[in-house]
Amino acid sequence: MTLIEALGSEIMVHFRLDAKTVDSGDPDAAEESTSATAANAVGRFHPRSPARMGQQVEVAVSAENIHFFDATTRLAIRD
Image 1 (spheres, rainbow, N blue to C red):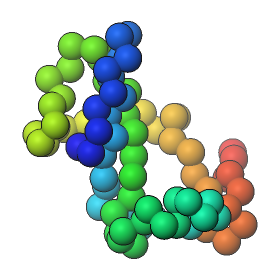
Image 2 (tube, rainbow, N blue to C red):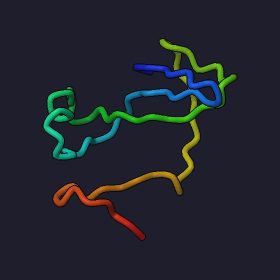
Image 3 (tube, one colour):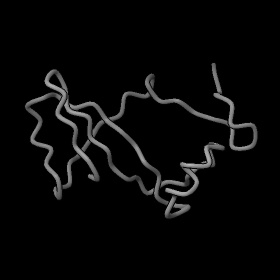
């Protein structure tokens, strides 16, 4: 985990994934990218979640909430 934001009704947890990154075209984001195999992700957690900085947690992903983008055009891929 790289950041935890407590927002009252939920916790936003920022973390890194062992996954290939895609250039978003944002010049600010390009400067922040440190590895072609470490993607950033954000998850919403219950406010009473045991997620804490420095700890590993197991997460389940709801596939209907994932957004995919074309690596060439950078446009969203839709059904």
